[in-house]
Image 1 (tube, rainbow, N blue to C red):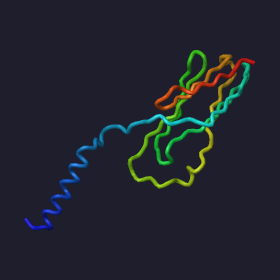
Image 2 (cartoon, helix red, strand yellow; image 1 turned 90 degrees about the vertical axis):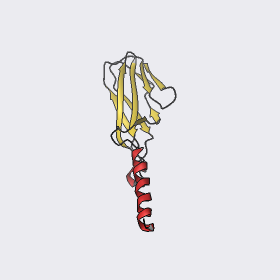
Image 3 (cartoon, helix red, strand yellow; image 1 turned 135 degrees about the vertical axis):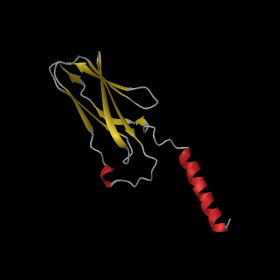
Image 4 (cartoon, rainbow, N blue to C red; image 1 turned 60 degrees about the vertical axis):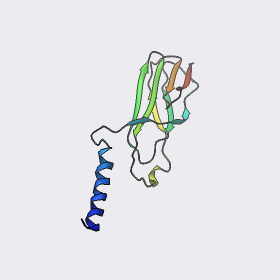
Length: 132
């Protein structure tokens, strides 16, 4: 075998071994992202509308960003998850500043109203909107 052919064979073998260890048929892994800059009102009557705003810390190149909400007996639990990428990611100009996410709770809610924010690898951040 000539040097050129053996070089190509080594490169091809490295490529096959590298791709064989990566399962391309498995679904991408979702990850919980941090929530910060949380703003909730201090008090609200049952007939008031509650405006909850927060920002989240996903990478600008993350895909499939999902806002999750789960009703609970005393309020709601909010979270954000996304799918990261292992590809080279240039910093997006539009992601330099993300607008806060706004969640609105209409009238006839619990009073007091508890808002839990899902955090990765730690306890939920909790805010209680007291009854007015």
